[in-house]
Amino acid sequence: MRKEHWFANVVILATAAGGFCAAVLAFMTSRHFQVGVIRQALLVGGPLLFGLLLLAAVRLSLPRRTALAMTLLSVVVAAYAAEAYLKALPALRVRWAAARFHLAYDGRSQLEVVHDLRKQGTEAYPSAFPAWQGLSPMADALLPLGGISRVTTVFCNEMGQYVIYRSDEHGFHNPEGIWSSAPLDVAVLGDSFTEGACVPTEQNFVELIRRAYPATLNLGMVGNGPLLMLADLKEFLPELRPRIVLWVYMEGNDLLFDLNREKGFASLTDYLHPEHRQGLLGRQAEVDALLRQETDHKYDAMLGGTMHMGGPGRFWRLWSLRHALGLQIGETLPDPSEVDFPLFRRVLDEARRTTAGWGGRLYFVYLPAEPRYRYDKYRLAHDSVRTPVLAIVNELQVPLIDLDAVMSQQKEIGELYAYPGAHFGPAGYHLTAEAILEALRK
Image 1 (cartoon, rainbow, N blue to C red):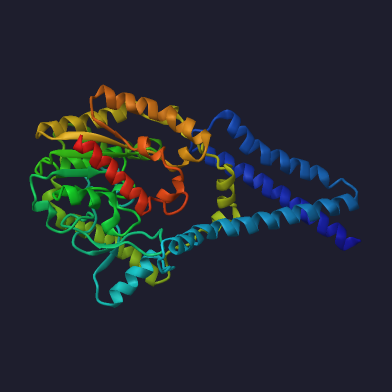
Image 2: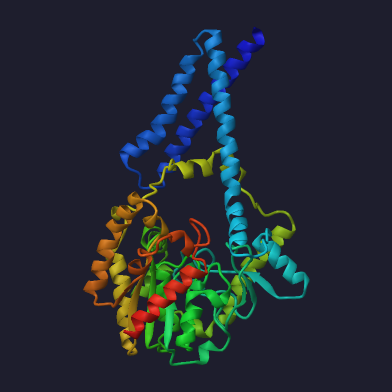
């Protein structure tokens, strides 16, 4: 009887403490997000009320406390089992995608692939990109916009095999020598979809466009938002003078995440000034030195076992489960009140004006987010941002290439992607290239 009493009280009180910790975590996290009062009350007040009710439950009779403790223990074990599964799910999805695309599955990490290539004598680096490396709050600090030049670059793996390519003269995903093709036919600005994640080089949509327009330059980089895209345009394109510039807008994150992060860096907002440049075409040696130092430091830390590679804190906080259930403190649906539309208009107008300055023409390529085709709530939420975006594009008289027109006609949207939540597979990139080429032909 005494052991049963001890067991019941420990389980109930431990679970109550977990509820209080969840409430404190939600409250602290909410300070870093724009969270509505109702949502904050639910995600902070819910765990708090749950903990208080469990404290009151210690007054129940012993049989009822024991039954409650067994129920709580079962729920906690089930929750962590679900968390373990969801944590492993990304790797499982890549394995399943490998089977779908008939590719051998490579379960190594990106840095493990780099390590193996270096052991073979290849100068290899993980992909370096400006969204996460080199962004300094100092306006006069060097801001890399490409990666490390002329090295074997290990990119990403969503179909079972890593995309590995040799970077060009300025660290982008192009065949070497393309920079001497001025004037260019086409230049493409964008994020990871534009860079070609995560399909073999010959299958990404810029490479497919290059078959029709040989002098096509890919300036896509992982994590690029509007200000980084504007920076690429102004640093690299005025001297190359492409006839066509494709501004590939990614509905899922360009305004809802990227722009809000980018506008905090003076080194990026300075590109809104007409004459601002860093002169990066002549500073590649400095860029390479900076990015080599950063990536070599991470590589050495991995080899020395000092790099924190996992996220155990996330596991104990049930991060994956809460994410799957929509219980993160941050809003999960697009909210137009969080978008800086005036800043976006300034960015696009400066891009249009700069392109027109050398006689080129800017096209706005609208790339929809996958969830809009799966869930009505996401479609409606994305439309609330899409409408003002297209109004700005129309107001500035920038020609529109809207991929929604072709993607919405697909019978099975999942066929376009490596797996749900991933980048395009070969079919998605092929569809994108065909839609863009058809628009340019007209």
